[in-house]
Every structure is written in C-alpha cells, then in structure tokens.
Image (spheres, rainbow, N blue to C red):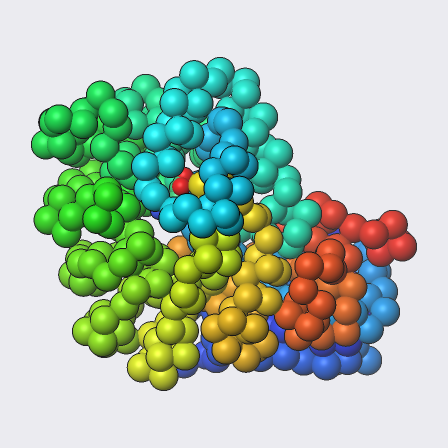
Length: 400
Ligand code: NIG
Ligand code: FE
C-alpha cells in the first residue's frame, strides 16, 4: 500500500549525503516536492511534477513536511504531579533534585494500570505533536520491582528504553549510598537489562559523582546496554568527561560546560543534547549552543518531559526556544530536533527522509519549517505519519 504526498511547499529531507556513515545527512530541503511512502518506508522523493503513481494521494496544499521529531530524552513513567513545586519555583524557590523523591513515592504507590494509562496519555500527546520516535527512562521507581516494571511498561510504547536506577539515592538508602550503588549495578540491573537498550546516570552534585557515574555506566555496558548521561544540569561537574570517556551516545543538559567539556564533545561521537525547555521551566541560563556548534560538536534538542524540571512534551517549543534563546538558526534547530535526536539515539533509520528511511513525517499547517519558531505556541500539526501509518490528521488531509 503506497501513498503519494504531493504539492509540498517545503520538504525537509536531511537526506544522507552518500559519503558518510548511514543515517541523516546535513539539513536539506526540496521545494515544490512530493514524497512516496510504501510499506512503512520512504520510497521516493523529488519534484511534484515527476512523482510516480501511488495507491493513495494526499494533497499537501503547499504545506511544509519534515521528518517526525526525535525526542531523545524523556521521563514518562510516573504517577502524581508537582504543579505546586513549579509554582513555588516561579515564586523564587530554586529547582532541587530532591523533588524527584516526591514522584518516586507516588510512582511506587501507583498500580500498573495507572502507570500504563499515564504513560500512554503522554505517548499519544507526543505523537499528536509530531514526535515519531521518543526515548523513555525509568528512574522514579528506584527498587528492583519498580524500576523493572517502569521499563517493562516503557517497552510497550518505544524501543528506546533507558534504565535510570541511578537517578537519585532513594530515602531508604540515605545512609548507605554504596549499598544503593551495589543494588543498581547488581540485582536491579539484572532485572532491568532485558527491557532496556540504554543506561543513564544523573551525574550532579545532589545525585551521583563522576566515579559513581563511571561505575554504573561500566556495569550497564557489561550487561549489553549503551550509555547516555545527565551532565551539567545544575552546575559544572564531571558528567561530560565521564560520558565521553565511556563512549556514551549522548551527554544531556550541558547547561554548564567548561571549555574542556566543549572540546571533549567536539572531538568525540558523544552528542550534546540540549533541553531548552528545562531552562525555560527552571529559569536557568541557556547552554552555549553556538559555542558547541562552532567547536564542531553535534547538537540534539529534546524535551526532557518529566513532572519536575520540565513538563512539556512539545518539540516545537524546544525548536522555538533554541532559535529565540540559544541563537540557533531555524535550520539548525529543526535539524537538531530530528537528525540530531536520531544521532543521539544511534538510529540511522529516522530523523531524515532519504529513500529507505522509516516513513515518519510531520506535515505543518505552515509553508516552511521556520514557522515552528515564527509562530511559537501555536498548534501547527496538520498530519503525522509514523512508519507510514497516519496517526494524526486534519480531516481534509485524509488520503483519497
Ligand atoms: O532531567 N535531572 C534529573 N532528572 C530530571 C528531573 C526529574 C525531576 O525533577 O523529577 C531532569 O531534569
Ligand atoms: Fe532528564
């Protein structure tokens, strides 16, 4: 079953440039374009006037089409909410990692049915806004049973599942950090590894230090998991260096970076994943995205959707903030929210619309990608396809 989407005003392809490793290439667009999707993948792109026939036709009416967003950092398995903490923060209280324990208590107390319903509601919310690949962490269970069930539920909605037993030390281990780390690297890892692809550590002054982070990553890697790290969210620290030394796919937050951190990211394959909606929601300074790009680092954008530091699921908001507050061009921001996320998740099949890519497409109610920043806060989703399947659409855009 093939679908031709034609009369596309601007088609953002990020298509592979041929010479490099598989996966997205640089930002690239075609105007007056069409795309054919067949059997869940991109089968053809080119000028609308030369488009081949297909079973269905969708007239884009000069709208823009981009690769679906790739949100490479989200914490979606939790119960409870922390609206009052957010309000207190806006009234002057600082963000503290300790708020995580509030969500841990609510998550442990929740049934599987509640956790699954919460997770599916958020997963649907992401999809409706054009996110077609997303990562999902545990980290609000912090017992063997609660981490394993968080990951089991996450694996129902995405393959990009991340074990974050090292989020914070839970209250019952407050006087026994080493005992908790033994658990995280031992029985908890054993119970969680079958559901996860990734291991992550919150490397921060109120969470885990550099040596502890390195230990947890090494244990995860020995169990077959790939590494990613929360680094430099609340202050400068060893997170980026530990991430790069471990060969992590991504160092996330990067709000506080030293010159050495920037150099380490630029000379490695570790992606700098920036989470500007966290800075927005915590009233923090924004990371030096221009400095990272100038040094040659790969930059991704992600939401960090979680009940504490940042409760948005909108990649469009992240693009708008990256452009307005971090001085990325609209092209750089959209690339980072699609191809950059794909690099951070080591997923060559998404983040671009080259022939053979998974048919993940976001059609905007706008003529160009720039409108994501030009019209901040406006719902611009006209239609979304994930693996060739239409998951959201304005009625007039249904195939005929
Ligand atoms: O990425 N930094 C650690 N984890 C989350 C916040 C979690 C929370 O506050 O509940 C983050 O910002
Ligand atoms: Fe996070």
